[in-house]
Length: 269
Image (cartoon, rainbow, N blue to C red; front, side, top):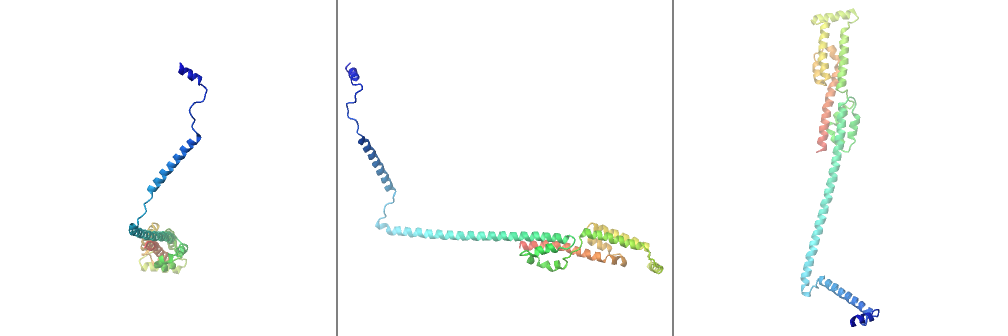
């Protein structure tokens, strides 16, 4: 009862004991901060290398000299590697340049080969090839022949059409008799002496032309010229220009193959 009464009597009154002063909490916080600073400083001091004593100075100098030598050797190695890298870059640039030059030569050579095989002049692709930096040197082995025949001749299809026209005209002229009586008699006398008639001559011509025209239509100019060899002198005279043009065409086609081979050998030498 006494305890309950005391509690009820002292309710709402301040406690009897002394209250903690504000300076005490501040002092405790300051002491904690000082302790943390001491611990941190001590840890840093432990992490720092100890001072080299005087007796260890020669060893330290020797270690320093070794490290300097290693550093110098490393710098020299790096300089050597940089030089090697620069040389590799120059080689790569030179390689790219040579490949571009080779590609340009091969493209120009292909255009010239096509121009050689086509009918007519090939002066334009030849000038384009010679205009390249190394074009004149690349085409030097064939330069004289190329310049000599630069005007060109018809292609094989064109020559086949020309042969058809020439054969038709030769066969048509052979069917006509001369208007003068004396010329007709002279031809008949020649035919009797040779045991040959105009009909037989025309038949032989027609057979020869048929064989030659078939070969020319297939692009075989060599076979066509060989088939025309047995023609009589009058018919052969009408074909002299065609035969010469066919020989030139064969030479130009072979030249086209040589152009490709010569340029490839020069470009990838």
